[in-house]
Image (cartoon, rainbow, N blue to C red; front, side, top):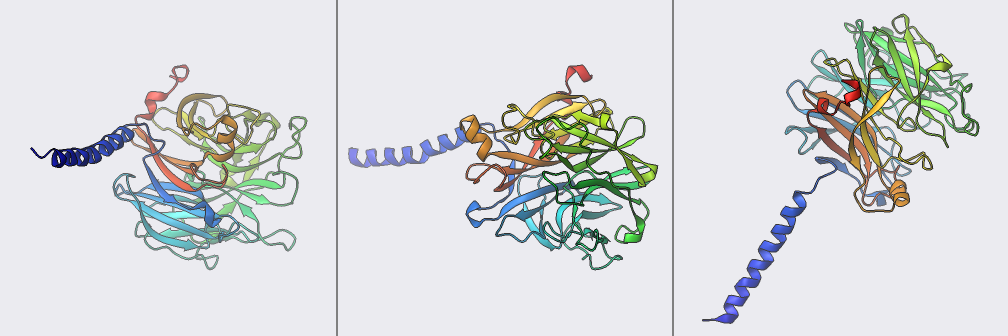
Length: 403
């Protein structure tokens, strides 16, 4: 018997099978996401932001996101498509002149509604696709998608938004925005408002859109010591239980956490009104969250960066699902993403973020995107990934107190 030859064959078999076994073991470990839509090398100085997604009528999933950072051009949005339920993604196109956009479908068409840029000149613009995201209209005038481009006292327009819900209510389509009216400390210079249009209107024609009154930030309930940081942005339009419509906003309140605000949307979108009693305790209210109403249960579901240590108000290394009956009282349901790199808590907070979630109901599931800073990101804010996840049978996680 040739022992040397036998030994060599054994080594080859070990080399083949041991790595396969290790890979198999790793594949069985719980993953933080199903797939990555995009990875960006942080060394480029370009980061990934503003994820939005929509399920198309043919079952495909369409995704958008943009780019930020000193080396980026803050008026480009990329469009990606998955034909296999989010397992993999292909790049369709890039949209110049779109930033902070929200994808939505209406009458068999796809739209993206946001601003023209993220820097010194920000009009509100909308684009339309009739071929499931492959090609898009260009907003060149008030008849082709430039909805609002007026500034204040001769200044450039400075409108602001995030990928938050587009809601149909009583025959009108609504989306929340903010207007930077003054460069005040923190976020106090942002006024909140909504725009709306009839469901039968041409959504590319600015004359069909109504802008509500603007609501400046109310400082009357600011906790002592937070006044220089406070303000509201990134509102969610949500339909309440009794047919009322709300703009639910994140409230910056460093060094305090978990504040939100409810602004009433009235008169078919003509007016907005705020009562200081409508400041609420909102888990994760320091960061962008997203709320949708489940028509089957009547409950409100929210993906948010719930804070677990008030000493770190900017914490975004946990993404969770919360549920509410009334938009005011929120109950924890399930953690969706939590840093698993074994980092000390302080280091994890500094370097990891599962943030700016966008999500949709998908039958019995929730599908969601995260602007993810993980394993190589230079800090929690400068995200190096757009990741996709799914929570199956989401209603199974409704807390008993709300059943």
